[in-house]
Each structure stands twice: as C-alpha cells, then as structure tokens.
Amino acid sequence: MVLPFNIACGFCKQCEQGLTNYCLIMQPKPDMAGAAYGFAEMGPYQGGQAELLRVSYGDFNALRLGEDAAERRLDYVMLADIFPTGYHATEMAGVKPGDQTIVYGAGPVGLMAAYSAILKGAGRVWVADHQPDRLRIAEEIGAIAINTAEQDPAEVVKEATLGLGANNGCECVGHQAHDPRGKEDATLTMNGLIDSVRFTGGIGVVGVFLPEDPGGAEAQGELEARGKVPLDFGMLWFKGQRPGTGQAPVKRYNRALRDLIAGGKAEPSFLVSHELSLDEASSAYEHFDNRDDGWTKVVLHPNGSNGSSHRSSASTRGSRSAGDGSSHQTLEELRREAKAQGIEGRSHMNKEQLQQALNH
Image (cartoon, rainbow, N blue to C red):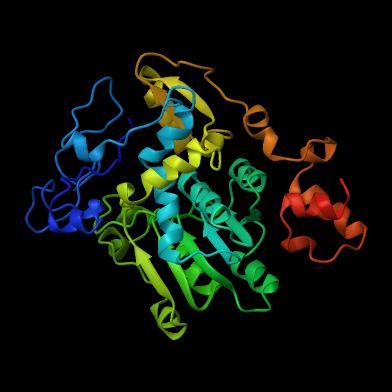
C-alpha cells in the first residue's frame, strides 16, 4: 500500500469532485479546506515519517500495489507526494504531446514535473535552476538544463521559439525562491514564468506559497511575510495566461501513475540519492536543506536503511544516458564540441540530441 500526503474522507463535496487536496471533513476549521500529514494549517495531524502511522479512512486513502511492491518500493513510494505533485503541475499547465515546456526549479518536484512532461510527450522541456547536481539529473532524463547563474531562462526559451516563449510552464519552487547569490525573492520564479511562457499559455504552480511566512520579513519584507507577493500581474493579464495553483489531489493521479510504474513506462526512483534509517532523518534534512551536492531525494526506512546509504547517480541513472564514452561528457562539453563542428541549434538540444548530432 502507498498513501497520499493528503488526508481525505472520500465523501464530502470536494472529495466527490476529486479534490481530495481540499477535503472539508478532515480539516477541523470550518473556514478552511484540506488536510495533510505534518503540514502547517492543514489539520492536527503529525507527519508520516514514523515507525507507525494511524491512517484515517484507510479504505479510501490507501492505494493497493501489485506483487512487485517490495521489489520496486523506491518507485512506488514516490506516489505518496512528489510524482503526483509534479504531474499535477503539468496538468494545470496543460502540457500536451509536442509542447515546449519550461520548469522553474530542479528540486524533487521540479524534476518530477519535467519527467511528467516528457512522459506526456512534450517536444522539448527546459529546467531552470542553479544547482549543478540537480541540473545534471535534468539532463539525464532528457530535459535541457538552464543554469540560472549563467543564463536568463526567459531569453533562452524565447531564442529557441522565435521569440514566442514556451507553450506552458511549471513553478516548482515557491515563496522561498532565491537567486544564485542566495537572496530570497518570492517573485523570482513566478515573474520568470510569466516572461517565459507565450501569450495564452498555461502555468501550473505547485511551489508552496503561504498566507503567512514567519521568516519572510527578515528574508524579504513585511509584504512577503503576509503572502503579498508583487506579481507581474499586468503582463500575466495582457498575455492572457492561465495560471493554476495549489497542492496536488494525489488520488486523482496515483492509480494511473502506479500503472505506468507497473508497466515499466515510468521509473521515478531515478531521483533517489540516499536510503537511510529513520534515526538519520535529522541529518538528512540538514544536508538537503543546505543543498549539499548529491542530496536530491532521501528515502527513510523505519527499521533500518534497508539498502545502501548512498545511491550513486552514475549507477542508478547511468542507463538513461548513451552507452559509450560520450555519456560521461557534460552538456556544456557536448555543446562546445558541437559549436566547433558548426552544428546549428546546439543551445536548444538536450544531451541525447547532441550526442546523436555528433554521431556519438
């Protein structure tokens, strides 16, 4: 079994519409909606990272897994949150086969959004971030990495699309977005998307934005502390863009995504960098919060690590790159080689396309 991070009753007005992320029964405040494990303002429920967990309405919330559950547990555990959340971003953005999609944020959810867009058949997917280790993973799954410390994502996308911009985009960072120098700016990714996405394009926002941010005043300002973000709304309106926001209704997607995993069409465990025991959780959070190199996604085992404490990205994800020596070249090295050979479009090709163009 695997559980959503949402806690839903299954029979209220919202749940009957598939909006289990905004359940009315499990949220005790009458003027609020939505409940979750260990999430502020979403009920009195403690987090699910524990040896034992009491599950409300388990017959509704639990998703049954197949006979390969133990063998592929690292894939299936992604159904609890980040795989459906990344997929939800692409649903709200309206990603379709052949689309050109820009994802802001190469954290676990951003990488799942990029992966979901690729699964949906998007023709080209860019991922913007400034963490080199995460951008490398984006390249390995077939996306085009944009290092925001070196390039403006909107300019890269516009150059590749005759100035039009991407068909759609996903915001997977939230109000604590920060620039490569570490300065927090809640407008950074949203306004970047408004600039990057073309007229009438869709934007899916799953990054967390809150009505109150206790640390916002010190990090940004009084307005940001109260969830008042200076959005470039005039351009959003002028371009007729369609934003969708909010947490993912995990149950809307998890059954179909489970079947993609069972059928060998999806392997979201490519993201897992470490498997640790529950006792090591605080250290894992510290590494992840510090953006330490290689700490992309941690799976905690209640009864011990149940596997290697560190999963090498080369061994875990190496099969997704070309099998010869060129698979060890970085995207920038391939671009330089393509430039030397006069190959056009090199700045808009992903790693696999560049390897093919170079006959590697």
